[in-house]
Amino acid sequence: MMQEESSIECPFCGEEITILVDVSVRRQNYIEDCSVCCRPIQLEVFFVKTTLWFR
Image (cartoon, rainbow, N blue to C red; front, side):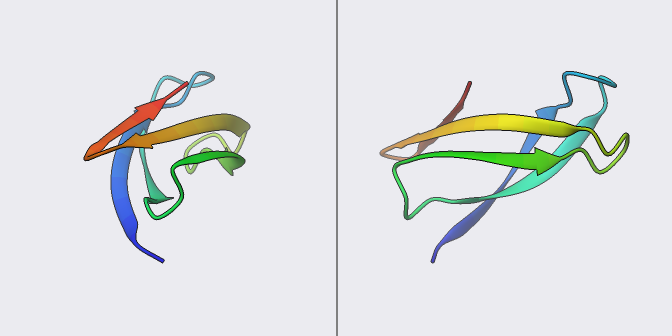
């Protein structure tokens, strides 16, 4: 498993949080709790070549 650290903005509290993404999986869906407000964030992550895309 290859992990890469990435920063996203929480859609609930607006704070920037750091998440770890498994870049060995090209497309993934999962829920990550915000480390500030603890609300669940549904993430859809795409890894294309060397670029991470979040939706």
